[in-house]
Length: 378
Image 1 (spheres, rainbow, N blue to C red):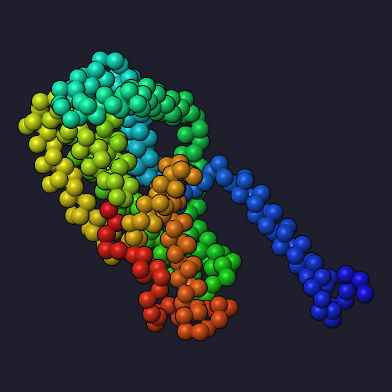
Image 2 (cartoon, rainbow, N blue to C red):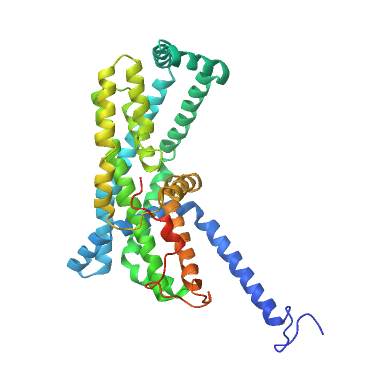
């Protein structure tokens, strides 16, 4: 009997199985090609999805007033472009230019000499700095890092056409996410091999993660960086824009926090003899910059999903490494989807059931994902 046998043959290499495997291979190949096609636009798609979810309530309000999905979506996209994207793009361009100026200033020999002389005057710290300079080539490493950052930052301005293209794609996709949201969700429901209840739970998890990231983490980090920037300006800290951006970035990363930025600045002020400025910055950092997180985050996020610090830490850093700035959204989103899928497996099999049948998620015991949630995401 040949390898390709009739329909009644139960051998592994039956005709039906070979055709099924060929269909599966063709499907995987087609999906991979589609991924390669869409890969350059993943950041734009992530930003569009984040905007659609975080501004959905205002869009619903417009839809209720206009009673036309196309007109409501068009007006919503125009408002997003005018209120959010355009000011944010201009702000990023200005900040990028200021960072270039600050980095050029920090590369100067006089700036490094001031820092070094101030530390040399301290007995213990001076010895540590001398050892670091002689063994680690510290000055060369710092200047090289500054030049590398300057080069990467300058590429943002050089790629302005690419940036404009991505922004156009964001607005284009955002329109259809507004207008065709219900149809898209229905199509996804029909394709995903989950029960209606499981799909609803997964959609809820995704929406909560996006809202917690955009309305919570990013907004709080922005407020913290503004508070820090105001104090840096008052205290006449050099390169205010650069340190404000660094504060914003550190505020986004769990565990590290803003202390990683304003702490060394306060130490520098103290070593320079400005003890009052150093104490003011420490007090502002602890009382204002550090506590605003605990005040705003619960208000902006409420009781939505908050993942544990450790997986969130790796999700954000890994997401940024893989997708760039869009990884701030895609990293936690990928983590939330993964935890949601693990939760589905747990719910289906926890009582000795089979994974082939959907489970009731309303009445279940504690799942592994519950242990990965915490009250607050730093």
